[in-house]
Image (cartoon, rainbow, N blue to C red; front, side):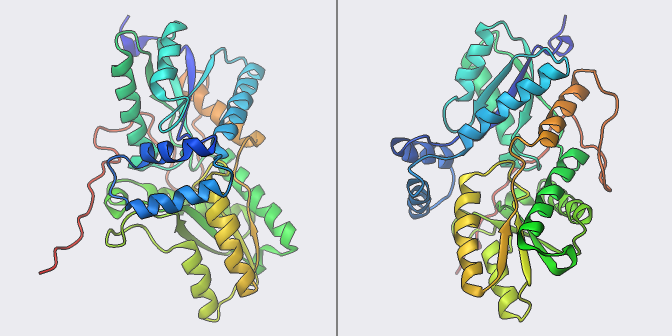
Length: 346
């Protein structure tokens, strides 16, 4: 039997990883930024963000909870796949997880990446990391295929629309009176130029706003980390809030929906719950930060349905909006990253 014909015998949750104590912060950030053109001063600033939360990122515990929820969802729906979890930047690291899977007799895994939108850092780089881990583990390392991107899956859209609705209720605001800022992690333009990140985010934001009954919305970005001379996706969320106020277009009610994050990462806690919330208080703007999907029932159900598609248990490939269900197998040139060089000044 060829490798491609092997049945799926395991599930792998693929994620970013995060420090779980003050002593982990700098080694973790060095892993994240290795080979990247990020000023050391920026790394030290981000380290302080983590240290302000005791040096613990919420992401690892959130992934433990998500993995448990997936395991329960699989059991309730007759999916007999053992579940594993591996990270790019902190323990459990991919090589260790694949080594354990090999020892357990796993030959071929179906994976869900905790990134809902296509770009180098959110998809291709993970696939490269897994290939490197397979090479490190050596002969017998399990194959790993990923499910398709679910940015326009109805369960994902409904999860976020419900979250926006809860924020509107918290503000005691009718949808027509509110503005929603959908935020996602900014990426370098050299990365954005070669992927569908912006197109997918724009479509998902439109669909969530429509489902929530909101007319006034914008897609903005956060958490850029590159040098000032390198172009990244804009506008920044805080710059947008200030610009709206300065232009006399202060929102009566503002909901910030971190659409680019599946759980409350450090960037959500610091950049939105701290910096953006402080700015809104200073400007007298009533703001609510909408919850990320986390382990919500419909989000976990979406993961299960995407897995069912790939293991041959579901023919229907659910998608809403104009873009249709995304591809299952990434093309060879998918999400390439060609850094833009700053212009040389004479």
